[in-house]
Image 1 (cartoon, rainbow, N blue to C red):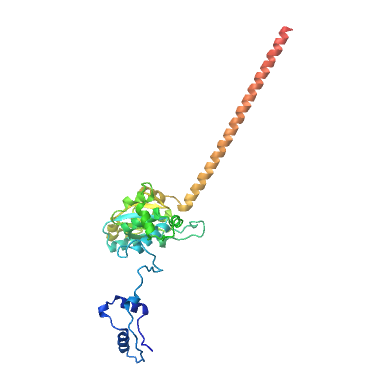
Image 2: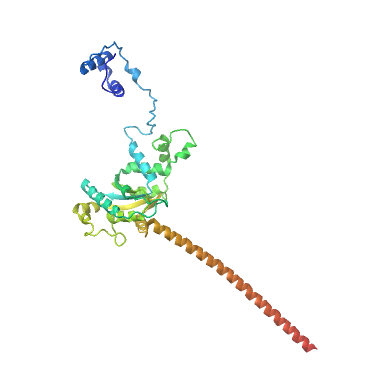
Length: 342
C-alpha cells in the first residue's frame, strides 16, 4: 500500500508541473520522503517515475468554467468588467460624482450620513410594480469606479447584442468574448446615444451612487446629502443632524461634484436629475399626475367633440330656419301679386 500524501492531488500535480526538469526526482523518492516525514510505516511498492510531459494539458484546452477571452490573462480585468456590465443592466438609476482626493475617513463619514438620511425616508405604500412595498434604502450604495473599465463595460452594454450575434454564428457571445470585443471596436459612437452623452463626463476619478429602483423620495434624500441645493434639496439642519457638519464630513462633501445620472437607460444632466428627485409624492405622485392628465385630456376631447357637434347642429338649424323664412316670404309675394292681378 503506497504512503498517504497529506496534500490534495490537484496541488501535487500543479507543483509537479512547476518544477524544472533539472530538479526532478523520481516518484519513488517523493513517496519515500513523504513516508519519513509522516513517520508512518506502510509497505510501499516500487513506483516508476512519471514523465512530466504526459501531465501537460493540450494547448487548445478550454476550461469549462472559464470561456475563452479576447484579452490576455495578464491584461484583462474580467471580473471588474463583468460586474460593471451587470450593474448597468440591472440598475435603473445611477448618479455620477467626480471626487478629488477623498481620504478613507471622509468616505466613511459620507457613507454614514447617506445611510442615515436614506433610513429616514418612509417606505412606499405600493411597490414599484404595484405589488408589496419594498424598502430600497439598504440597497443604495456609493462606490468608486474604474473609469477605463467602466467605459468598456458601457460600450458592451450599449453596442453589443448577444441575441443578435447568436443568430449569426455559433461563436462565444459572452461579455469578454472576441465577438463582443470586435463589436465595440468597430462600433460607431453616436453623440445622441447614452454612451455618447455620458462618456465625456467619465474622466478622472468618478464615483457612482446606485439605486435598485427609481424612487424620487430616496433620490431627493441622497441629493440633500451629497449635492444640497436649497430650496428644493436643503441640507439637514445642525440640530437634527449634527454629524453632517463635522469637519471630516464637510471636507469630503466639498470634494464631490454631481456631473449627471443615468435613469432608465436615459442620460440626465444635473437639472434633469434634480427634476426627477423633485417629483412630489414619488412614484405614487407621478402616477396620480398621469391619471389626472389622462382624465383632463379625455374630458377636453369629449368637450371638444360635443362642442363641434353642437355647433354643427346650430348651423344646420339656422340654415333651415333661413330657408323656411325665405320660402314663406316668396309665398307671400306670390299671393300679393295674385291679388293685384285679380
